[in-house]
Image 1 (cartoon, rainbow, N blue to C red):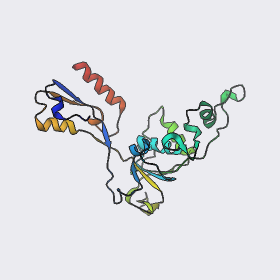
Image 2: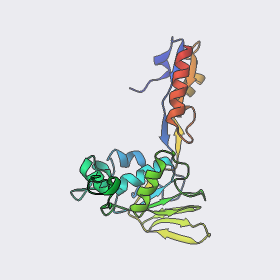
Image 3: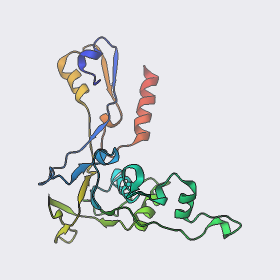
Image 4: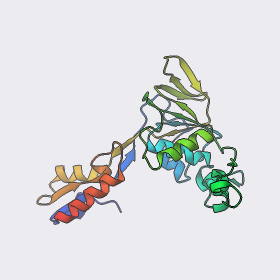
Length: 239
């Protein structure tokens, strides 16, 4: 169950590592039936339509786009699996053109690509290229997937509203445009979940205890697992 301040009364230290929640989209039409959060998509709680706009092109937005190319929840659409994302080794090798070195030099042959499961539109407010800030060892894979999957990428946009026609934006040139989609997945950042820490600070129930806030609960922007693990390890070493 969710802990309250009273549950941790009497402890010398309280470590609040409650993570993040998706940021709520502040936009007319944000409550439209076609709009969903990325946890709703990834858990299968909501099913996307054929054409999907992904708002926010950070690490989560890129991951969600690749997920959609593969078919979404269960990696399945209309009874088929997308080979590039299947756990089937043979299918994965076919997708990336990995072959037998006895057949092709260095074991590199022609890739056999499936049609993407969804038509994906990936948008961001920043004017920098999408995927620029991804990890050096994995970012190239995600950028390649976006390219081979035909993901339409938009940078420097301003979001105007969402309605039955789709997502209305101002493009980088300031022109009004409608991205005609069936679903909108919001990946517009996260907010720290600090309810318990704030309750402890204001209620006095945690009086005498030292409260430590780490991980996403401490800093939600550019969520970084390495930083969160480092905070946890260093804190544990001091207790």
